[in-house]
Image (cartoon, rainbow, N blue to C red; front, side, top):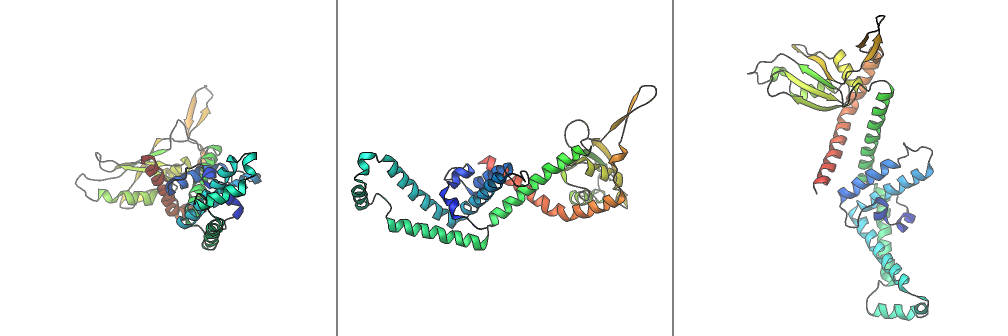
Length: 308
């Protein structure tokens, strides 16, 4: 990503809201938090939000590259020293500014003009290198942000489409299959196999296989629609079928009968067509692997950060 020289007039640490000694993890976490609030996908008609997002992205590019960060810190320090000296000068001292600067140079208390030119040149070289190479850190963090935005949109869309379920929490399913206690293969169902089976329908947040009761597990889905399709369509292994039932979050509607009683039933509108189902399965299979890696990496970074 190209880095604008004008951006270097800003304080990149203040722009991201981190201290000068911040680690790469702290910088990346701060970038994600701020970039999410001004992402162009969330503010398509706000040019100021797009400009801020661009500045944040370039700040991440410079500060997560070791060589570019060192060069930037040197320029920043020189400018800060010059600003402090100028601020301290009053009207009387301004008249002797040239003599004062000469004495400061002799005492080696300020950065010489030649040194300022040299360190600025170094930073410009690093910026040019980043422009040519691109920023792997920025690309990685923006993928995480896109995934967070996608998940937020999925949750909102699920509620708007009537898949919010009832009660609180995410939808959970009970899985059962035949398995003897002494069966080391667990009836053919390992955690990996169950995830492979269930992830065809959507994101599986958690999967817990019971240690006490053989042939039993609980699966937690990110959306009700995915859980509903698993209940409707999945049969498991042909030689040992799965029995899948709702544990929590089943979508319901109410029907009022002539006698005034209200009876809940599953909404027929929530059943997708076979064509929609096949298309969704193909899409989920392509996206599941990459999405899961991104989510796990984001959670790992946040957990590591909270422990420091």
